[in-house]
Length: 216
Image (cartoon, rainbow, N blue to C red; front, side, top):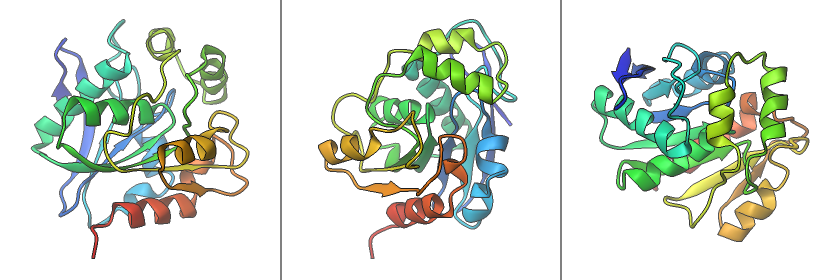
């Protein structure tokens, strides 16, 4: 399915209805299939419902030359939520997707309940780090996305209750434990995982699902 962004870009999303839908936002140089389907996340969410979005420039979404700031990407995701007819979702993100989820929760108060952020800390996104990720994941022409994201960070107080998770060998999110502590947010270690394999961690899935579960 596709939603149409404000600038006309087509934003692809997959929607499985359910009682507690979870929005899934992938990271840089990846897409929903690689980040969420191939790692078992969609199976883990079976019965809850989900919305998995391909960010612009990635996967099956359009690839325009602009619109790649965290706020711009968040507005694309909001268009997908509107198209799916969802007023409120919980959110799971990975890496760059955390910037998008954070901005989404600020952009649309009340639309996001709780959020689990994997593979991200509080440091500004380094251009060199994005280039390493693009090379490792065989990303294509993503220069516009690098320009739009580099230098941004998770700033301000958490817009909703958040959980952080990262692997012990994740250099991109090495500061995640300390950053979570500075916000008074829970942090889950994913053991000896790296930035590239932590997303598939069963510990991440279990911690996120427990955190997102309604109280009681």
